[in-house]
Every structure is written in C-alpha cells, then in structure tokens.
Image 1 (cartoon, one colour):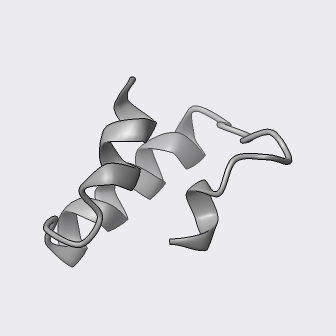
Image 2: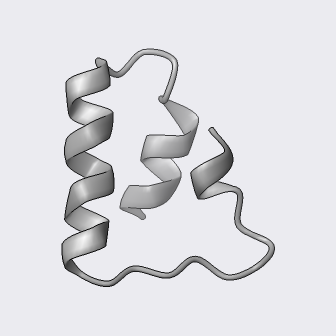
Image 3: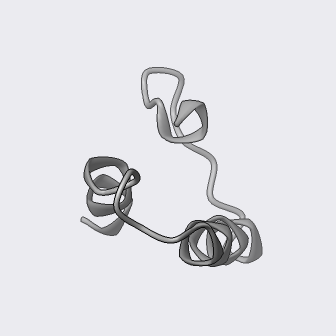
Length: 41
C-alpha cells in the first residue's frame, strides 16, 4: 500500500516527493485512523 511505502522510505525520499505525497492525500481527503503514524514522520 502506498502510504506504507512512504512511511518505510521517508528517510530516502526527497522532501519534494514527500510534500507531493502529502498533498495528494490532502486532495483525496485522506484521514488516517488514530493508530496510524503517517503524519508523525
């Protein structure tokens, strides 16, 4: 799943790619559940 890939590779991804990923989820109105640490990278 794509969010898991982003979490696993956050240290290797350029900041611009991470920003693009976050903006894509914002456009999709992505809301992680309480136990997901997507926004605490």
